[in-house]
Amino acid sequence: MKQVYITSFILLAITLGYFLVSKPVHKEIPKEIPKEIKNLLIITIDTVRADTFYASEDNQFSDRLSIWLKRARVYRNAQSVAPWTIPSIATVLTGYAQNQHGAGAFPGAIANLNTQLPSSVLAGVSTLAERLGVAGFSSNAASAHPWFSSGFGLERGFNTIDARKSRKNIDIWFEQSIKQREQASVQQRNFTYLHYMEAHGRHTRNLEEYFSKLSNDQKKRGLNWAGAICENGLEATICQRYLVYNQAVLELRDSLANVLEQLENSGLLEQTLVLVYSDHGEEFHDHLEQAQADNHDPRGIYGFGHGNSLYEEQLHIPLLIWNPNDEKGRIVNTPVSLLDVAPSILDWLGVDISADNFPGMLLDKAEKETDRVFYASNIAYGPEQISVRDGDEKSIWNTVSDKSSYFNLKNDPDEQQPLTGDDLVLHFDKLTGDYLDLASANIGEPPEIDAEQLERLKSIGYLQGSEVEATVKPKPDPNIDLTIEQDETKILPPQTENQ
Image: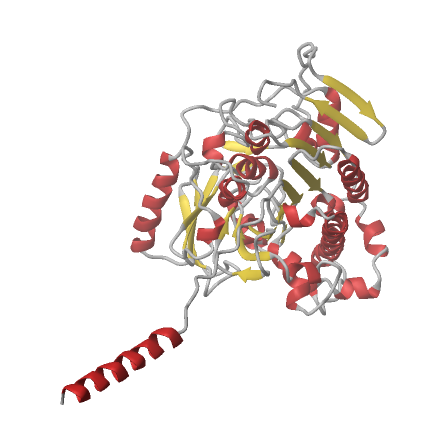
Protein backbone atom coordinates (compact mmCIF):
# COMPACT_ATOMS: atom_id res chain seq x y z
CA MET A 1 0.00 0.00 0.00
CA LYS A 2 2.87 2.33 0.84
CA GLN A 3 4.33 1.69 -2.62
CA VAL A 4 1.01 2.62 -4.21
CA TYR A 5 0.94 5.94 -2.32
CA ILE A 6 4.51 6.71 -3.39
CA THR A 7 3.75 5.86 -7.00
CA SER A 8 0.57 8.00 -6.95
CA PHE A 9 2.48 10.90 -5.41
CA ILE A 10 5.13 10.69 -8.13
CA LEU A 11 2.49 10.61 -10.88
CA LEU A 12 0.70 13.59 -9.30
CA ALA A 13 3.94 15.56 -9.11
CA ILE A 14 4.76 14.77 -12.73
CA THR A 15 1.25 15.83 -13.81
CA LEU A 16 1.40 19.10 -11.87
CA GLY A 17 4.85 19.79 -13.23
CA TYR A 18 3.57 19.27 -16.75
CA PHE A 19 0.78 21.80 -16.31
CA LEU A 20 3.06 24.29 -14.61
CA VAL A 21 5.68 24.03 -17.35
CA SER A 22 3.23 23.99 -20.23
CA LYS A 23 1.05 26.87 -18.92
CA PRO A 24 1.35 29.73 -21.43
CA VAL A 25 3.13 32.80 -20.12
CA HIS A 26 1.24 36.06 -20.82
CA LYS A 27 3.86 38.72 -21.21
CA GLU A 28 2.74 42.28 -20.73
CA ILE A 29 3.01 44.14 -24.02
CA PRO A 30 4.86 47.39 -23.40
CA LYS A 31 2.89 50.49 -24.20
CA GLU A 32 4.11 52.41 -27.21
CA ILE A 33 6.01 55.52 -26.19
CA PRO A 34 4.21 58.59 -27.55
CA LYS A 35 6.04 60.44 -30.27
CA GLU A 36 7.49 63.76 -29.24
CA ILE A 37 5.55 66.55 -30.91
CA LYS A 38 8.14 69.18 -31.72
CA ASN A 39 6.13 71.64 -33.80
CA LEU A 40 2.72 73.27 -33.95
CA LEU A 41 0.86 74.55 -37.00
CA ILE A 42 -2.46 76.38 -36.57
CA ILE A 43 -4.41 77.31 -39.71
CA THR A 44 -7.38 79.67 -39.62
CA ILE A 45 -9.74 79.52 -42.59
CA ASP A 46 -11.72 82.69 -41.96
CA THR A 47 -15.53 82.76 -42.37
CA VAL A 48 -16.05 79.08 -43.26
CA ARG A 49 -19.31 77.52 -42.12
CA ALA A 50 -19.25 73.82 -41.33
CA ASP A 51 -21.95 72.61 -43.70
CA THR A 52 -20.18 74.18 -46.69
CA PHE A 53 -16.75 72.86 -45.72
CA TYR A 54 -17.95 69.29 -45.14
CA ALA A 55 -20.52 69.18 -47.92
CA SER A 56 -18.11 67.71 -50.46
CA GLU A 57 -17.73 64.61 -48.25
CA ASP A 58 -21.47 64.42 -47.69
CA ASN A 59 -22.00 64.50 -51.46
CA GLN A 60 -19.15 62.08 -52.25
CA PHE A 61 -17.17 64.80 -53.99
CA SER A 62 -13.45 64.12 -53.82
CA ASP A 63 -10.68 66.69 -53.89
CA ARG A 64 -7.04 66.85 -52.76
CA LEU A 65 -8.06 67.28 -49.11
CA SER A 66 -10.46 64.31 -49.02
CA ILE A 67 -7.70 61.73 -48.57
CA TRP A 68 -6.15 63.82 -45.80
CA LEU A 69 -9.41 63.97 -43.85
CA LYS A 70 -9.27 60.19 -43.50
CA ARG A 71 -6.11 60.69 -41.43
CA ALA A 72 -7.50 63.50 -39.27
CA ARG A 73 -9.70 63.94 -36.25
CA VAL A 74 -12.71 65.56 -37.89
CA TYR A 75 -14.89 67.37 -35.37
CA ARG A 76 -18.22 67.62 -37.18
CA ASN A 77 -19.96 69.49 -34.37
CA ALA A 78 -17.45 72.15 -33.30
CA GLN A 79 -18.81 75.40 -31.89
CA SER A 80 -17.33 78.87 -32.16
CA VAL A 81 -17.63 81.29 -29.25
CA ALA A 82 -18.48 84.39 -31.30
CA PRO A 83 -19.82 85.29 -34.75
CA TRP A 84 -16.77 87.30 -35.85
CA THR A 85 -13.00 87.23 -35.84
CA ILE A 86 -11.38 89.04 -32.91
CA PRO A 87 -13.23 87.44 -29.95
CA SER A 88 -13.14 84.02 -31.60
CA ILE A 89 -9.42 83.97 -32.44
CA ALA A 90 -8.54 85.51 -29.08
CA THR A 91 -10.21 82.49 -27.46
CA VAL A 92 -8.22 80.08 -29.64
CA LEU A 93 -4.95 81.85 -28.84
CA THR A 94 -5.56 82.27 -25.09
CA GLY A 95 -7.88 79.44 -24.02
CA TYR A 96 -10.24 81.85 -22.25
CA ALA A 97 -13.85 82.80 -22.88
CA GLN A 98 -14.57 86.03 -24.69
CA ASN A 99 -15.75 87.75 -21.51
CA GLN A 100 -12.48 86.72 -19.83
CA HIS A 101 -9.82 87.65 -22.41
CA GLY A 102 -11.54 91.00 -23.04
CA ALA A 103 -11.13 91.18 -26.84
CA GLY A 104 -13.87 92.07 -29.31
CA ALA A 105 -16.13 94.11 -27.01
CA PHE A 106 -17.71 97.53 -27.59
CA PRO A 107 -18.38 100.36 -25.13
CA GLY A 108 -22.15 100.74 -25.55
CA ALA A 109 -25.20 98.50 -25.49
CA ILE A 110 -25.40 98.57 -29.30
CA ALA A 111 -22.24 97.36 -31.04
CA ASN A 112 -21.34 98.85 -34.40
CA LEU A 113 -18.10 97.71 -36.00
CA ASN A 114 -18.86 100.17 -38.77
CA THR A 115 -18.05 103.10 -36.51
CA GLN A 116 -16.36 101.73 -33.38
CA LEU A 117 -13.04 100.04 -32.71
CA PRO A 118 -13.37 96.85 -30.65
CA SER A 119 -11.34 96.15 -27.51
CA SER A 120 -8.08 94.20 -27.54
CA VAL A 121 -6.88 91.23 -25.47
CA LEU A 122 -6.36 92.24 -21.85
CA ALA A 123 -2.74 92.90 -20.91
CA GLY A 124 -2.59 90.18 -18.27
CA VAL A 125 -3.82 87.37 -20.53
CA SER A 126 -1.06 85.24 -22.07
CA THR A 127 -1.26 83.95 -25.63
CA LEU A 128 -0.15 80.60 -27.01
CA ALA A 129 2.82 82.23 -28.74
CA GLU A 130 3.94 83.83 -25.47
CA ARG A 131 3.62 80.60 -23.51
CA LEU A 132 5.34 78.52 -26.16
CA GLY A 133 8.11 81.12 -26.36
CA VAL A 134 8.82 80.47 -22.70
CA ALA A 135 8.91 76.74 -23.53
CA GLY A 136 11.59 77.31 -26.17
CA PHE A 137 9.52 77.62 -29.34
CA SER A 138 10.18 80.10 -32.12
CA SER A 139 6.96 81.46 -33.62
CA ASN A 140 6.03 83.01 -36.93
CA ALA A 141 2.82 83.89 -38.72
CA ALA A 142 1.56 84.66 -42.21
CA SER A 143 -1.83 86.35 -42.13
CA ALA A 144 -4.13 87.92 -44.69
CA HIS A 145 -6.25 89.51 -41.95
CA PRO A 146 -5.48 93.09 -40.79
CA TRP A 147 -6.87 92.35 -37.31
CA PHE A 148 -3.88 90.13 -36.71
CA SER A 149 -1.28 92.88 -37.06
CA SER A 150 -3.18 95.97 -35.90
CA GLY A 151 -2.41 95.87 -32.18
CA PHE A 152 -5.43 93.96 -30.83
CA GLY A 153 -3.27 91.49 -28.91
CA LEU A 154 -3.48 88.58 -31.34
CA GLU A 155 0.12 89.24 -32.41
CA ARG A 156 1.63 88.93 -28.93
CA GLY A 157 4.56 86.55 -28.65
CA PHE A 158 5.23 86.03 -32.35
CA ASN A 159 8.80 86.58 -33.50
CA THR A 160 7.66 87.60 -36.99
CA ILE A 161 4.31 88.35 -38.63
CA ASP A 162 4.10 88.54 -42.42
CA ALA A 163 1.05 90.26 -43.91
CA ARG A 164 0.03 88.41 -47.07
CA LYS A 165 -2.70 89.31 -49.52
CA SER A 166 -3.91 85.95 -50.82
CA ARG A 167 -3.86 82.23 -50.19
CA LYS A 168 -1.34 81.71 -52.98
CA ASN A 169 1.06 84.13 -51.30
CA ILE A 170 0.54 82.38 -47.97
CA ASP A 171 1.19 79.03 -49.67
CA ILE A 172 4.43 80.37 -51.13
CA TRP A 173 5.45 81.82 -47.77
CA PHE A 174 4.86 78.46 -46.08
CA GLU A 175 6.85 76.59 -48.72
CA GLN A 176 9.76 78.98 -48.22
CA SER A 177 9.59 78.65 -44.43
CA ILE A 178 9.73 74.85 -44.75
CA LYS A 179 12.85 75.11 -46.92
CA GLN A 180 14.49 77.45 -44.40
CA ARG A 181 13.82 75.00 -41.58
CA GLU A 182 15.21 72.11 -43.64
CA GLN A 183 18.40 74.09 -44.25
CA ALA A 184 18.81 75.20 -40.64
CA SER A 185 21.65 73.50 -38.79
CA VAL A 186 19.73 73.53 -35.50
CA GLN A 187 16.06 72.58 -35.45
CA GLN A 188 14.30 74.72 -32.82
CA ARG A 189 10.76 73.80 -31.84
CA ASN A 190 8.42 75.93 -33.91
CA PHE A 191 4.90 77.38 -33.83
CA THR A 192 3.57 78.56 -37.20
CA TYR A 193 0.24 80.32 -37.69
CA LEU A 194 -1.47 80.77 -41.08
CA HIS A 195 -4.61 82.84 -41.66
CA TYR A 196 -6.52 82.61 -44.97
CA MET A 197 -9.22 85.11 -45.98
CA GLU A 198 -10.62 83.92 -49.34
CA ALA A 199 -14.05 82.99 -47.94
CA HIS A 200 -14.42 86.25 -46.03
CA GLY A 201 -15.35 88.71 -48.74
CA ARG A 202 -15.02 87.46 -52.29
CA HIS A 203 -18.78 86.95 -52.50
CA THR A 204 -19.47 90.51 -51.32
CA ARG A 205 -17.38 92.38 -53.91
CA ASN A 206 -17.06 92.09 -57.69
CA LEU A 207 -19.80 89.45 -57.60
CA GLU A 208 -20.52 89.47 -61.33
CA GLU A 209 -16.85 89.05 -62.16
CA TYR A 210 -16.33 86.10 -59.81
CA PHE A 211 -19.64 84.45 -60.72
CA SER A 212 -18.92 84.69 -64.44
CA LYS A 213 -15.66 82.79 -63.91
CA LEU A 214 -17.39 79.77 -62.39
CA SER A 215 -17.71 76.76 -64.65
CA ASN A 216 -20.96 74.81 -64.87
CA ASP A 217 -19.32 72.07 -62.83
CA GLN A 218 -18.37 74.56 -60.12
CA LYS A 219 -21.90 75.93 -60.05
CA LYS A 220 -23.27 72.43 -59.53
CA ARG A 221 -21.17 72.23 -56.36
CA GLY A 222 -23.18 75.07 -54.84
CA LEU A 223 -24.16 72.48 -52.34
CA ASN A 224 -26.96 74.09 -50.32
CA TRP A 225 -28.23 75.53 -53.59
CA ALA A 226 -27.76 72.29 -55.57
CA GLY A 227 -30.22 72.14 -58.41
CA ALA A 228 -31.33 75.73 -57.91
CA ILE A 229 -31.33 78.16 -60.80
CA CYS A 230 -30.03 81.61 -59.92
CA GLU A 231 -32.86 83.56 -61.55
CA ASN A 232 -33.74 87.25 -61.16
CA GLY A 233 -34.35 89.00 -57.88
CA LEU A 234 -32.89 89.06 -54.38
CA GLU A 235 -32.64 85.29 -53.96
CA ALA A 236 -30.75 85.06 -57.25
CA THR A 237 -28.12 87.41 -55.88
CA ILE A 238 -27.84 85.43 -52.65
CA CYS A 239 -27.63 82.23 -54.68
CA GLN A 240 -24.80 83.67 -56.76
CA ARG A 241 -23.03 84.89 -53.65
CA TYR A 242 -23.20 81.43 -52.13
CA LEU A 243 -21.80 79.78 -55.25
CA VAL A 244 -18.85 82.19 -55.29
CA TYR A 245 -18.39 81.64 -51.55
CA ASN A 246 -18.53 77.87 -52.01
CA GLN A 247 -15.81 78.03 -54.65
CA ALA A 248 -13.61 80.03 -52.27
CA VAL A 249 -14.06 77.32 -49.62
CA LEU A 250 -13.07 74.64 -52.13
CA GLU A 251 -9.93 76.63 -52.96
CA LEU A 252 -9.10 76.83 -49.25
CA ARG A 253 -9.41 73.06 -49.02
CA ASP A 254 -6.85 72.88 -51.82
CA SER A 255 -4.45 75.11 -49.88
CA LEU A 256 -4.85 72.93 -46.79
CA ALA A 257 -3.92 69.87 -48.84
CA ASN A 258 -0.92 71.75 -50.22
CA VAL A 259 0.31 72.63 -46.73
CA LEU A 260 -0.07 69.04 -45.51
CA GLU A 261 1.77 67.72 -48.56
CA GLN A 262 4.62 70.18 -47.93
CA LEU A 263 4.91 68.95 -44.35
CA GLU A 264 4.88 65.29 -45.34
CA ASN A 265 7.40 65.72 -48.18
CA SER A 266 9.78 67.51 -45.80
CA GLY A 267 9.47 64.81 -43.14
CA LEU A 268 8.07 67.29 -40.62
CA LEU A 269 4.50 65.99 -40.49
CA GLU A 270 5.34 63.09 -38.16
CA GLN A 271 6.55 65.57 -35.53
CA THR A 272 4.03 68.38 -36.11
CA LEU A 273 0.63 68.91 -34.52
CA VAL A 274 -1.63 70.47 -37.17
CA LEU A 275 -4.90 72.16 -36.24
CA VAL A 276 -7.32 73.72 -38.76
CA TYR A 277 -10.41 75.66 -37.75
CA SER A 278 -12.68 78.49 -38.80
CA ASP A 279 -13.33 81.43 -36.51
CA HIS A 280 -17.00 81.75 -37.53
CA GLY A 281 -19.42 81.00 -40.34
CA GLU A 282 -21.48 83.07 -42.75
CA GLU A 283 -25.22 83.60 -43.25
CA PHE A 284 -26.96 83.50 -46.63
CA HIS A 285 -30.53 84.46 -45.68
CA ASP A 286 -30.80 81.42 -43.42
CA HIS A 287 -32.67 83.67 -40.96
CA LEU A 288 -33.73 86.61 -43.10
CA GLU A 289 -37.28 86.85 -41.73
CA GLN A 290 -36.08 86.70 -38.13
CA ALA A 291 -33.45 89.37 -38.79
CA GLN A 292 -35.98 91.68 -40.42
CA ALA A 293 -38.37 91.18 -37.50
CA ASP A 294 -35.61 91.94 -34.98
CA ASN A 295 -34.57 95.00 -37.02
CA HIS A 296 -31.48 95.55 -34.90
CA ASP A 297 -28.48 95.68 -37.27
CA PRO A 298 -27.31 99.34 -37.28
CA ARG A 299 -26.09 98.93 -40.88
CA GLY A 300 -29.51 97.86 -42.12
CA ILE A 301 -28.11 94.51 -43.33
CA TYR A 302 -30.37 91.61 -42.47
CA GLY A 303 -29.88 87.86 -42.81
CA PHE A 304 -26.51 88.07 -44.52
CA GLY A 305 -22.86 88.08 -43.52
CA HIS A 306 -21.62 87.56 -39.98
CA GLY A 307 -21.24 89.31 -36.66
CA ASN A 308 -24.94 90.06 -36.31
CA SER A 309 -26.54 86.89 -34.91
CA LEU A 310 -25.83 83.72 -32.95
CA TYR A 311 -27.58 81.17 -35.15
CA GLU A 312 -25.71 78.00 -36.09
CA GLU A 313 -24.74 79.17 -39.59
CA GLN A 314 -22.43 81.62 -37.82
CA LEU A 315 -21.35 79.39 -34.90
CA HIS A 316 -21.05 75.87 -36.36
CA ILE A 317 -17.53 75.67 -37.77
CA PRO A 318 -15.04 73.03 -39.03
CA LEU A 319 -12.30 71.79 -36.71
CA LEU A 320 -9.64 69.31 -37.86
CA ILE A 321 -6.57 67.89 -36.12
CA TRP A 322 -3.64 65.84 -37.37
CA ASN A 323 -1.84 64.51 -34.29
CA PRO A 324 1.32 62.42 -34.82
CA ASN A 325 0.20 60.12 -32.00
CA ASP A 326 -3.16 59.25 -33.59
CA GLU A 327 -2.96 55.81 -35.20
CA LYS A 328 -5.69 56.69 -37.66
CA GLY A 329 -8.28 59.37 -38.33
CA ARG A 330 -11.76 59.47 -36.89
CA ILE A 331 -14.97 61.47 -37.10
CA VAL A 332 -16.11 62.99 -33.82
CA ASN A 333 -19.78 63.97 -33.63
CA THR A 334 -19.76 65.04 -29.98
CA PRO A 335 -20.01 68.84 -29.65
CA VAL A 336 -16.74 70.56 -28.75
CA SER A 337 -15.75 74.21 -28.45
CA LEU A 338 -12.96 76.49 -29.58
CA LEU A 339 -12.40 76.93 -25.84
CA ASP A 340 -10.94 73.42 -25.90
CA VAL A 341 -8.21 74.25 -28.41
CA ALA A 342 -5.54 76.07 -26.36
CA PRO A 343 -5.46 73.76 -23.31
CA SER A 344 -5.39 70.70 -25.61
CA ILE A 345 -2.50 72.09 -27.66
CA LEU A 346 -0.46 72.95 -24.57
CA ASP A 347 -1.10 69.51 -23.09
CA TRP A 348 -0.12 67.70 -26.31
CA LEU A 349 3.07 69.77 -26.54
CA GLY A 350 4.04 68.91 -22.97
CA VAL A 351 3.45 72.34 -21.44
CA ASP A 352 2.22 72.18 -17.84
CA ILE A 353 -1.30 73.60 -17.48
CA SER A 354 -2.06 72.28 -13.99
CA ALA A 355 -2.04 75.80 -12.55
CA ASP A 356 -4.37 77.20 -15.23
CA ASN A 357 -8.08 77.57 -14.76
CA PHE A 358 -9.13 77.11 -18.38
CA PRO A 359 -12.91 77.01 -18.88
CA GLY A 360 -12.54 74.53 -21.76
CA MET A 361 -11.75 70.83 -21.73
CA LEU A 362 -8.96 68.71 -23.20
CA LEU A 363 -10.22 67.45 -26.56
CA ASP A 364 -9.11 63.88 -25.76
CA LYS A 365 -11.71 63.95 -22.99
CA ALA A 366 -14.17 66.39 -24.55
CA GLU A 367 -14.93 64.17 -27.51
CA LYS A 368 -16.33 61.57 -25.10
CA GLU A 369 -18.20 64.06 -22.91
CA THR A 370 -21.82 64.63 -23.94
CA ASP A 371 -22.96 66.61 -20.88
CA ARG A 372 -21.55 70.08 -21.59
CA VAL A 373 -22.76 73.66 -21.92
CA PHE A 374 -21.46 75.98 -24.67
CA TYR A 375 -21.66 79.77 -24.78
CA ALA A 376 -21.34 82.36 -27.53
CA SER A 377 -21.51 86.16 -27.37
CA ASN A 378 -19.86 89.38 -28.59
CA ILE A 379 -22.08 90.67 -31.36
CA ALA A 380 -20.33 93.09 -33.76
CA TYR A 381 -23.45 94.77 -35.17
CA GLY A 382 -26.42 95.43 -32.90
CA PRO A 383 -27.46 94.68 -29.29
CA GLU A 384 -25.30 92.20 -27.43
CA GLN A 385 -26.64 88.67 -27.50
CA ILE A 386 -25.68 85.56 -25.56
CA SER A 387 -26.39 82.03 -26.74
CA VAL A 388 -26.32 78.96 -24.50
CA ARG A 389 -26.28 75.41 -25.82
CA ASP A 390 -27.02 72.58 -23.41
CA GLY A 391 -27.05 69.26 -25.24
CA ASP A 392 -29.49 69.62 -28.12
CA GLU A 393 -31.29 72.60 -26.60
CA LYS A 394 -30.21 76.17 -27.23
CA SER A 395 -31.22 79.67 -26.20
CA ILE A 396 -30.42 83.08 -27.71
CA TRP A 397 -30.92 86.09 -25.44
CA ASN A 398 -31.01 89.68 -26.67
CA THR A 399 -29.62 91.61 -23.70
CA VAL A 400 -31.22 94.94 -24.75
CA SER A 401 -34.76 93.84 -25.58
CA ASP A 402 -34.56 91.06 -22.96
CA LYS A 403 -36.18 88.65 -25.43
CA SER A 404 -35.08 85.03 -25.70
CA SER A 405 -35.58 82.32 -28.32
CA TYR A 406 -35.28 78.59 -27.63
CA PHE A 407 -34.58 75.74 -30.07
CA ASN A 408 -33.99 72.01 -30.16
CA LEU A 409 -31.08 71.46 -32.55
CA LYS A 410 -31.75 67.74 -32.95
CA ASN A 411 -35.34 68.17 -34.10
CA ASP A 412 -34.84 71.60 -35.67
CA PRO A 413 -31.19 71.97 -36.78
CA ASP A 414 -32.00 75.03 -38.89
CA GLU A 415 -33.49 76.88 -35.89
CA GLN A 416 -36.77 77.73 -37.60
CA GLN A 417 -39.22 76.47 -34.95
CA PRO A 418 -38.82 78.36 -31.64
CA LEU A 419 -39.90 76.55 -28.49
CA THR A 420 -41.74 77.93 -25.47
CA GLY A 421 -42.04 76.87 -21.85
CA ASP A 422 -41.36 78.17 -18.36
CA ASP A 423 -38.94 75.30 -17.73
CA LEU A 424 -36.77 76.48 -20.65
CA VAL A 425 -36.79 80.05 -19.32
CA LEU A 426 -35.72 79.02 -15.81
CA HIS A 427 -33.10 76.55 -17.03
CA PHE A 428 -31.38 78.88 -19.50
CA ASP A 429 -31.63 81.94 -17.23
CA LYS A 430 -29.51 80.05 -14.70
CA LEU A 431 -26.97 78.94 -17.33
CA THR A 432 -26.71 82.47 -18.73
CA GLY A 433 -26.05 83.72 -15.21
CA ASP A 434 -23.21 81.19 -14.90
CA TYR A 435 -21.62 82.64 -18.04
CA LEU A 436 -21.96 86.20 -16.79
CA ASP A 437 -20.21 85.16 -13.58
CA LEU A 438 -17.12 84.21 -15.63
CA ALA A 439 -16.60 87.78 -16.76
CA SER A 440 -13.36 89.53 -15.91
CA ALA A 441 -13.62 92.65 -13.76
CA ASN A 442 -11.37 94.43 -16.28
CA ILE A 443 -12.60 95.90 -19.54
CA GLY A 444 -10.42 95.71 -22.64
CA GLU A 445 -9.61 98.95 -24.44
CA PRO A 446 -9.35 99.47 -28.20
CA PRO A 447 -5.82 100.05 -29.47
CA GLU A 448 -4.67 103.06 -31.43
CA ILE A 449 -4.41 102.41 -35.15
CA ASP A 450 -2.85 104.49 -37.88
CA ALA A 451 -4.30 105.60 -41.23
CA GLU A 452 -2.74 102.70 -43.13
CA GLN A 453 -4.17 100.10 -40.74
CA LEU A 454 -7.57 101.78 -40.94
CA GLU A 455 -7.53 101.60 -44.73
CA ARG A 456 -6.62 97.93 -44.65
CA LEU A 457 -9.55 97.22 -42.32
CA LYS A 458 -11.89 99.26 -44.53
CA SER A 459 -10.74 97.29 -47.57
CA ILE A 460 -12.31 94.12 -46.15
CA GLY A 461 -15.56 95.77 -45.08
CA TYR A 462 -14.94 96.98 -41.52
CA LEU A 463 -15.11 100.51 -40.08
CA GLN A 464 -16.96 101.96 -43.06
CA GLY A 465 -18.67 104.74 -41.09
CA SER A 466 -17.66 108.35 -41.54
CA GLU A 467 -17.42 108.78 -37.76
CA VAL A 468 -14.25 106.70 -37.62
CA GLU A 469 -11.03 108.66 -37.54
CA ALA A 470 -7.60 107.09 -37.45
CA THR A 471 -5.78 107.89 -34.25
CA VAL A 472 -2.09 108.72 -34.30
CA LYS A 473 0.15 106.17 -32.68
CA PRO A 474 2.83 107.32 -30.23
CA LYS A 475 6.42 107.39 -31.37
CA PRO A 476 7.50 103.88 -32.32
CA ASP A 477 9.38 101.77 -29.84
CA PRO A 478 13.06 101.73 -30.90
CA ASN A 479 13.15 98.00 -30.09
CA ILE A 480 10.56 97.26 -32.77
CA ASP A 481 11.80 96.93 -36.33
CA LEU A 482 8.92 97.54 -38.74
CA THR A 483 9.82 97.01 -42.37
CA ILE A 484 7.43 97.06 -45.30
CA GLU A 485 8.17 95.02 -48.39
CA GLN A 486 6.16 94.25 -51.47
CA ASP A 487 3.17 92.21 -50.34
CA GLU A 488 4.69 91.80 -46.91
CA THR A 489 4.85 93.47 -43.50
CA LYS A 490 7.21 92.09 -40.88
CA ILE A 491 6.59 92.97 -37.25
CA LEU A 492 9.42 92.11 -34.90
CA PRO A 493 8.38 92.48 -31.25
CA PRO A 494 10.94 93.29 -28.56
CA GLN A 495 12.87 90.26 -27.35
CA THR A 496 12.44 89.27 -23.73
CA GLU A 497 14.47 87.06 -21.44
CA ASN A 498 12.00 84.27 -22.05
CA GLN A 499 12.26 84.35 -25.83
